[in-house]
Length: 80
Image (cartoon, rainbow, N blue to C red; front, side):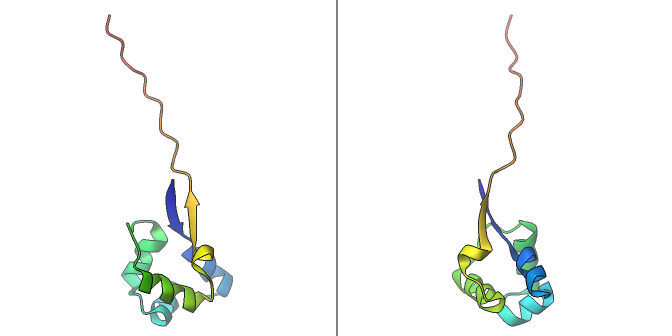
């Protein structure tokens, strides 16, 4: 399982851009881009708070848990 940020969906709902969110939240654009693309490994509480205030949402609206990609089944080589 992986925790994802629903930034893109919430921005579309509000008709806003990532640049707008950077200005309103105080979080730099590059950090927001990493959150949006899933390349970030963590988020600080002050960034989470700024994003939630700007998008008028709660952390529960922003954070979701997604199932990880199903692992491919590898055939085991049997020794004969």
